[in-house]
Every structure is written in structure tokens, then in C-alpha cells.
Length: 137
Image 1 (tube, rainbow, N blue to C red):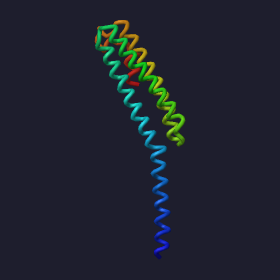
Image 2: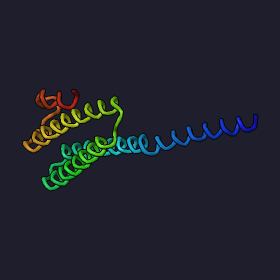
Image 3: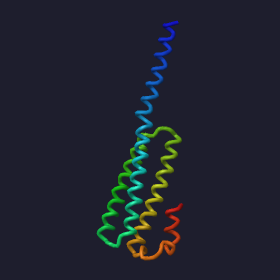
């Protein structure tokens, strides 16, 4: 009976070890990457808000550089995820995330163009519908 219990405990310990290895090598890095994606998206949102609020060209340029740096980091993170994700469902979600990131980038470009053309002096309700839709779609 003791030998059976020892054998069963070794098998269970091996399963726990495999589960821990899977968490450390697959899931935790993916969770970390998604947290970094969220952080970079937040940086972009803050920079875009600052672009809309400031009147100074130098500060707008500085914030545009922050947006560009965050975009590069997002592209790097998405490429990293593309290499590491193996689950078909996760790959499908990654493709959807890439599509959304492209749409978000297009909206950022529209917003920065409008701000540089002087749209911040108007109320947001007078902005073109295409710009409002790009943020809420």
C-alpha cells in the first residue's frame, strides 16, 4: 500500500510540475505582454489628450513622439506574441487585436491631423463624424 501511495504521489507531483512549467513558459509571458499592451495604449491616450489640450507646437511634437514610441513598442509586443502564441483561440484573438490596433492607429492619425489644423478651438460636438466614429467604433 505504501509503495502504491509513493508511486501515485510521484505521478501527481509530475503533473503539478508540468502545470507549473506551462504557466511559467506560456501563460505568464502572455499575460505580461497584454499588460504591457494596455500600458502603451494608456500612454497613447494620455499623449493624445495632451495634444488636444495644449496650444504649443513644441509640446504637441513631444507628445507625438510619445505616441510614435508607444506604437513601436506595441508593434514589438504584437510580434512577440505572434511568435509565442500557439493556441488557435489565442491566435484568433491576436489577429483581432492586430486589426483593432490598425483601426486605432488610423483614428490617432485623424485626430492628430485635425488638432494640427486647429480643430481643438471648436467644441468636440462640432468635430467631423468620421473622427468621432473612429474613437467609438
